[in-house]
Amino acid sequence: MEQYSTVAIEDGLSECSDLEELKGRILPLLRSQRAAWSEKLEEIMTQKSLSCAQMARLCGVSEPAVRKWRRGAIPQKRDMFLRIGFAAGYDLPEMNAFLKRYGKCPQLYARSLEDSVCIFVLNSKEQEHTYACYLRVLEQVKRELENGCTAQDNEYSTEYLRDSFLHMDSQEEMTAFVKDVAPSFQRAYAKLYSYVIAFLQINLQSEFTMAGDGRQASFHSLAEESCWSSSLRHCISEIRGKRWFPLRHKVISLGLHLNMNVDAINKMLGYAQMEPLYAKNPIEAAVMWAINEAQLCSEDDEIIPDGSAELCLFVKDILEQLELAEEGSYLFEDL
Image 1 (cartoon, rainbow, N blue to C red):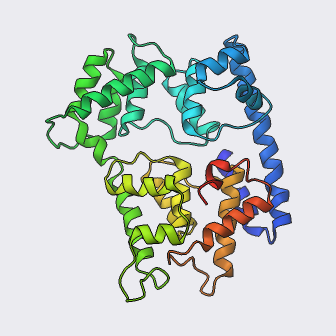
Image 2: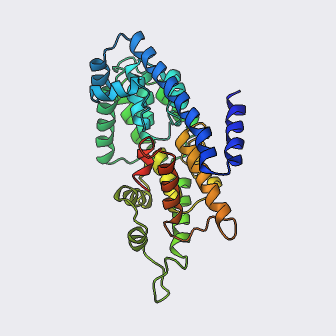
Image 3: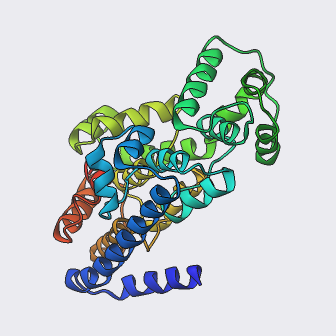
């Protein structure tokens, strides 16, 4: 039923001929999601007997932030849903379901160092099941890895890594295992890195970005010309160094800056172990509509990866006209 309703929404979006019609479809969706989220948070706080102050302390946020959540403001980042899931006392299956259902983000992924530590903490009988404990263990593991490791570059399946973390209790055992399989973490997003770099090269080789003497533009000049945020520039630097941990909103932002169509962004999200653009998310629904509208308005019915900022500016304008700039500030700030 979930899949059918999502497809139905996507079909409805494609039939919207103007912004007013799009607004008529998106705003009821947004109100419904806010109501569902407010109800879920109330359920968590009631079951755990948490006051706003206690919830704020457990999640590392202010009391006003918790009050906004109770009124329906939906957290914008995956990390915040992790914090709330820890506060709720969720086990691994519950955390994964919570991330996907309410955060619209991927479940914990054993090839990600951060996620594998989270899997370990959630299942360990020795560790306190709190977000603070997760951060402490993660920092200690990272320090150990920075000290160097001599692991052989063997191939391990995601299932093997996940099962291994599920059967560890002590931090020492987990740290030793991570050092043994360190290359697997470095390869986790290899296809994503290659895909982004390939698209970046296409944008750099376009007529728009070529220098006056015909030489290919540098990424620095492209970023300056198209007003890339410092945050996105840092993402590219980390990708080039093969050490970037993808965040959903940053993946989508990169797709827009690299002039990708919906299919290309979805492929990139797949390489990041994430779900495709989600029509039930009002912000992503607006992004999908804007990209398709820009494509229809182009001469060849295609989004041209030419290094220009036109697609970003168009999407930004659509979000503003739909009055979604604040709701989608996590994405809006990079456009």
